[in-house]
Amino acid sequence: MEYVEVGGTNLRACRVCLGTWAIGGRMWGGTEERESISAILSALDRGINSFVVSIYKYKIRRLLAVS
Image (tube, rainbow, N blue to C red; front, side, top):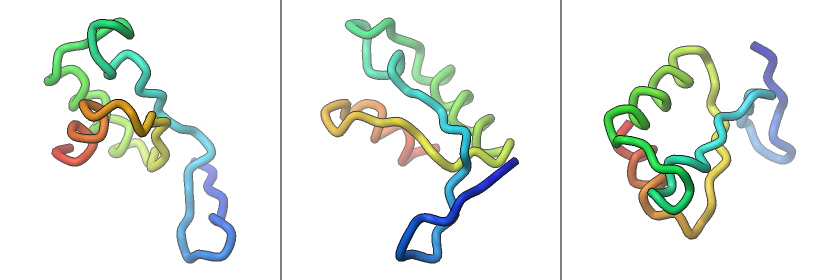
């Protein structure tokens, strides 16, 4: 996996990110919570540490926090 440094920090972000559009709720496609958590954990296991998240999608932020 290839990572880049986040400017001005000691953080390294993966060049691949997980888009979470469908996790936002039924209006955006929807998924079961256990499937969403499984996808997040699978991404983390593979070294993906970047996620595309809307600040307006509380459900996604909550699932990322519990994963």
